[in-house]
Amino acid sequence: MTEIDPAEEAGVFRALADSTRRQILEDLRSGELTAGDITARFPISGPSISRHLGILKSAGLIRERREANRIYYSLVEERLALCVGRFLSAICPEQVIVKQRRGRDTKNGAAG
Image (cartoon, rainbow, N blue to C red):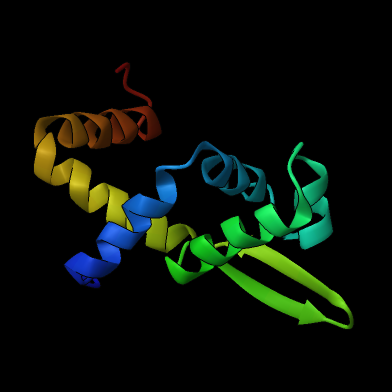
């Protein structure tokens, strides 16, 4: 498992503190979107969305890919899972164990 520097982890949580950025991450869950696609989903200006995307990118939560004159953004799921998962397992380890057990029981056909 990759270790994340505490300062980097703090950047992730700062990025997650804003509801617009959390919504962008949710929107990217279904696949990559262009900057224009993302901007069209919000009632705020393009430059504001660009700032939000910059914060998410610097936190390592999204990546960008340029193709011609378009920029495509996608979620870096493993980064988000690593930071939030580490935090949750430190704060409420019993809940993480219960969820893991429940997931295994469901896969094995047992009732959870």
